[in-house]
Image (cartoon, rainbow, N blue to C red; front, side, top):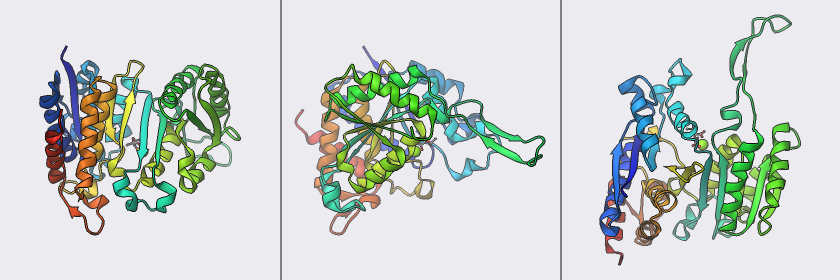
Length: 367
Ligand code: IPM
Ligand code: MG
């Protein structure tokens, strides 16, 4: 049966990097006789410019129908001044995540041996690094209510404004992300570290309790707990102590950027956001990088690797996924580097040249 893939280029460098990933997908489709069909839609600032909203109805409808979604990135200074926060590009992304219930966000941080020098940490600290951050994506303080900015009435602060958000997790929300994390750990090194702030925040006291409860169903996985401040420190001190980390939406946002940078280039890292049936949205971990948009220098590899993850997790085409990952490794072996991962003695290439090199490497692999 034909599987439908929705392509959402988004803003900034999104369209440039997605163009390359689509070429790679088309090549994989030919080579592996994949029965997939690609469609396109707008999201984020580009959707706002065209439709006056970052998540148009037509995009949401296509997203609901699709078997998987490949997204570039959203956001940029052009839309930062929008008064109505609901019209900001980020709301398009958050609306897709929550509307499709993509609660399970997998963010691998893998150090490619070819890029060991690109890390800001010493090679011995990061060589062989392979960790997975499982971030809860549709709850926590990102979505908790009440939220807003209000004016205080009465008392010594009368007339002053205050901003407020709500950090809330229900047991079922914690339980379902715990399951994703334990199952991921079972497929890897069987070690899971749950990150919380249970010394201060009640919501994470409950988080820790549920993690311990779910752990009983996974006796083969070793569960540990860590406060988020310590986890941030340990990630830069000795990141290889971790296998899988699981945490809430906001802590995961922060820790996954730190973990990504350990590998030397956030431009290399894909991510998957899955619902309970493994339907997913796949996007690079980096953002829309408006400062370099349109220059043809962005690294398309994270998006290409996101397409590989999509083939593996949502479309059940693991041979094609393996081949794309091998092709990426081959172009790194050839010494090809975009500016963000460039080092002396390598060949600096553009976004399009990198995409073409991956396509060529993929075509050259024996199927
Ligand atoms: C991410 C991004 C998003 C987030 C933004 C763009 C809303 O930083 O995917 O990590 O905070 O989740
Ligand atoms: Mg982030």
